[in-house]
Image (tube, rainbow, N blue to C red; front, side):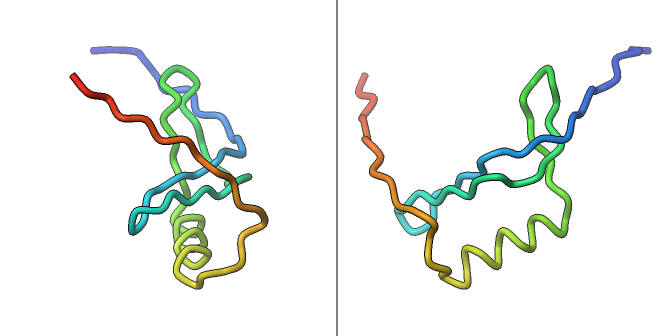
Length: 73
């Protein structure tokens, strides 16, 4: 049996998603982060709050431009 135990630390992260062809960033989101893999875990109440921010169409704090590149083989 493996004695490996995940080390999760409390951090503030930037949550990102694509919705209807637009990227949305939400800064300073509380998360538990795996120190080794970088995987982020969010409390259910945090997920509900994120959904409210996105679905309510709140005015963003700021807007940034994002370059888009294509990976063509």
